[in-house]
Structure formats: structure tokens, C-alpha cells
Amino acid sequence: MSMKKTGRTISCFSASICRVLNEKGINILEEQLFCSEKLLALECKTPYDSAFIDLESVVMDALTKLRICIQPIKIVNLQALQEELVLEGAVLMKTKIDFLRYSTLFSTAITMQRGHYVVLKREGNKIRLIDSYIPTTPLTQYDDWYEITEEMVEKSLFFRVFRDEGSTPCEDLRDLVREIQQRFLEDEQKKRAFEHFKQNVCQLKPSEKHICYEMSSALSITGTVASRRVFKRMVESTNSFSEETISSLDEICKQYNLVRMLLLKCYLRFDDRNIEDTVYAISKLHKNEERVLRKLNTM
Image (cartoon, rainbow, N blue to C red; front, side, top):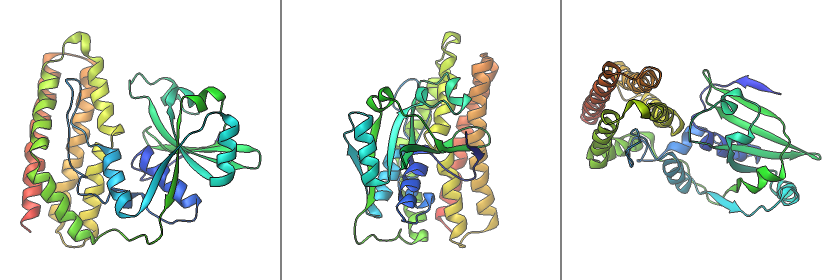
């Protein structure tokens, strides 16, 4: 098996799209797939949710701007998959982590979030599986021949990824940063998301401590923590903001990670003190992110 550490991949969805495009000779950076004013927008829909971004919506918005298309393919069996790979070279596959045997993270995962995107390509008579985002610490990736079974094909989804003619580059980065700020500051849903997140944590019972694990995992898997890092790098790349501003955004990234770790702590030891610490950290994060974004908007 070919496993190696990776650097800055952001999510399995965006990293896999990027890899398919790269396999087709289309040079694009993964961060370009986050050029959306929705980047920092938060949701919290159910009593068991943390606050999270709709990562696929963010990426699809950016893909529309870049005139990149994702088209579902009906694949009924392994033979049809082989034929599609001959035509396309590489395809995007959304499968269940239960089928991915190359990482113990997947085989031992207790999360209910089982979907994962990878890339398939054909070389000779074999199929190569490329996983650019295995959420270990540090991140790892897999790139090797892989046995795809009929059951795996039957229970997975497949997509073509291609670029329309007349593709346009991402808009001016400074304008995009302003649009992301404005969307965040004006978004009432974001405020409700933080309030619901705190309420969800407060209402948990000891018998529901596994939900703390799900909330923690969601902050990573949905790209919520990563979205803040992407935004910080966008701001940094404009060369228009001070080191103090960049440092403040970096602190927000750390606070999101702190909330994620505190939720794990609640899962491991569910008691009033840990719950209180987590709710306090969420409140502090909400207040600080609002303050930093407002200050950024006045510069």
C-alpha cells in the first residue's frame, strides 16, 4: 500500500475534484474551489449538530464561477465502471468508508458520517484509487492499485468532472475577501447557528455523549475548521492587511480547534465542568470571530 503524509488538502470532496482535473491536464489549486462568498457561512440544523459550513455548496458555487462541471454517472456494475474509466481517464467516486481498507482510521471509526470522496483511474487492466484526504493527524493520502468490488460499485456514486470552454479565473482576491466578510457579518443564520450549537451541547445527557464525538468530527469533516484557515490565507495573500490582523485570524482558527478538542474531551469524560468549558469556548469563539471580522471590514 502506498500511504504518505500530505500537506494542505482541505477536504476529500475538493481535493478529489482537484485531482481529477489535474489528471486531465487542467491545472487548478484546491483553494480556488473555495472562492465563494459562502465560505464562512454557518448552519446548525438539528438538535445533534455543531455549527458547520455547507462545504459542498461552497465548492459548487466556486465551480460554477470557474465553469467546472460535475455530472452524475449511472454506473450499474464493475464492467460499466471499467468502460467509463477508459473514456474519462479518471472519475470522482463517493463511497462508504466501510469499503476503504487502507486506513485503520476508517475501519475503527465510530462516526455516523460514513461518506467519503476518492478518485478512480484506470491504468492497463487495473484500477488505481487515489485518496487525497485521509483525516488522520497529520493528514495522509493513499495512491495505489485497489480491488473494487461489485458491492462497492453498487453502493457508491460516480461523477464526471470537466471544464466548459471559456473558463474564467477566480475574481480579484481582495473583492472576494470583502464579499466573504459582508456575507458573514450580515448573516443572521450564523448567529442562530452558534446559539443552537450551545443549546445542543447544554441539553446533552450522559447517555448521549457519543454525540459530542459526532459534533467534534463534523467540525473537521465538513471543512468548517479548514474554511477559517483558507480565509486567513486569502487575507494574507492580498498583502493588504497587517500582521496583527493575520494573527487575529490565526487565533480564530485555533479557537475552532479548541472547541473541537473540548467536544472530544466531553465524549471521553462527560461531566458538568467539561460541558461548561465547551459552552464557554463556543460563546468566546462567536464573540471573537464577529469582532475580528468587523474590525477587518473597517480596514
